[in-house]
Length: 297
Image (tube, rainbow, N blue to C red; front, side, top):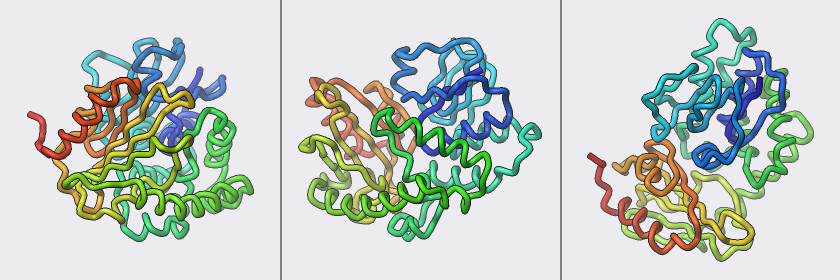
């Protein structure tokens, strides 16, 4: 039996909970949504997919993204919920012996972006938020760290996890990274009416940082768009879109909109990847939809 999960904080917590509830016999397989959508990954009987689109080859499936709803029958659970971890936790109620209530509560808060201005500006004062920011998919060389966090969260409370030497090192790096990222956002973001657009295609390696920081700098925007190349050869582009969590006036269902461009996500946030040759067509359509700011009928 194997867990197949998305390598973000929600996916990591899903892996923790499933590992407690099921007899997992294989190493966790970390994959991105488009790899499931395009059937680039071998899924087999016994696989438990979490925080990812459905694949009919799996045995159990858990998710909470608006764009991933299905009509076919399956074993597992799908709910429009703050986090996939919450969906997993509810499904296995009574089967998980360790108390993960606080961890799931914090994951709900982080994945649904229910954050305060202070939590965004000073994540170092909030251990769960800071820990979540150490999870970044910069290539699958990060797998040992993701697996390490799963093991740490299964055995320790948040104080014990944050005290781990490798985690402490990552936390220090995140604080410095966010400091630099603020300047990057200021230099590379423009406002198009009520949409902030951060274009990082001029960078060989696009800088990373707190995804909510842009909303503290461009408070008049109701939505943000972040554009970067997705591979060293610049053959594909990644576009991330989100509602401003401090100016909640965006009416566009982001996950539904991005499903038209090979992506998906929640109502308030999502991402898509496409060939660079499509950028001139797709990016203006995404921005235009956000500027129109009309709910889809």
